[in-house]
Amino acid sequence: MGLEVGTYGIDGLNPETSVVVGLSLEQARYLARELKERADDLSARAT
Image 1: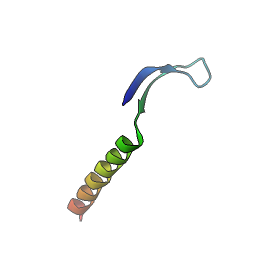
Image 2: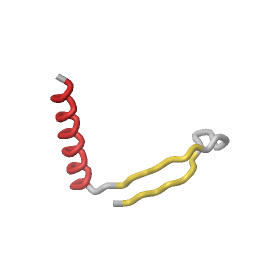
Image 3: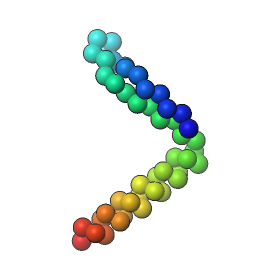
Image 4: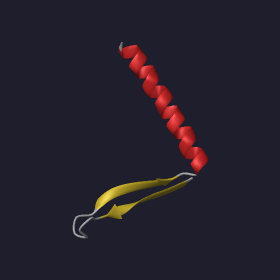
């Protein structure tokens, strides 16, 4: 996994703090599964 924090400006004049996370395909799938499960849990609690 990679993490990069920096300031990037779209127009080169107004930089904003940005965070870029690089994941392998396996890590991205794991993260997506975890987020979906948590969203499903929250949805079930709300009903």
